[in-house]
Amino acid sequence: MEWCDADGRNVKHTTIIDELRGYASMGGKIYIGADSMYRNTKCVFACTIALHDAKQQIAKYYFKKERDNSSKYEDLTVKINKEVDLAINTALEIRSEIPGSSIEIHVDIGKKKKNTTRFLVKQIRGWVTGLGFACCIKPNSWASSDIADWHTK
Image 1: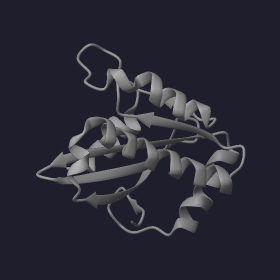
Image 2: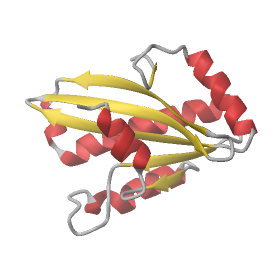
Image 3: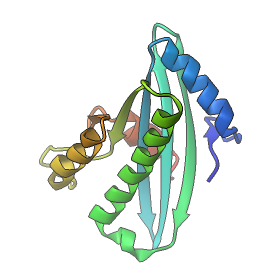
Image 4: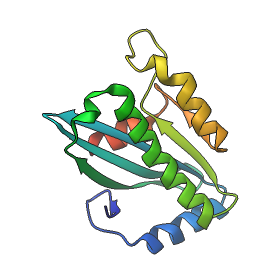
């Protein structure tokens, strides 16, 4: 899986880290989200790194996609755990290269009655915050629910 910019052009890992480092040094928060789409025994996962800060006049993101033909992702819990794992691993890598950066992980789950993922909220929030990251869920999890979702189609 290679990282791409919003236009789908490949971007080197070092280029992204350099940009994130500059952005974080100016007080910017790094938003990370992942989402997936399961169809016909095929699951497409997308992970995003988003930068959004009105003071720095920036709204930009990077994404990477992964396809898996395993039917195990029919199980909603397995699929959501894989999404969160992708986001967490990305966040851990960024934190190791940019210590002290402010990172918020966006998870495509919600606690409203209509959300089929509501039973996962406590577990997933504990997993993310236990690793020292801020956790955001629906309806405020735009890095996963909007940006990553767009790239799963």
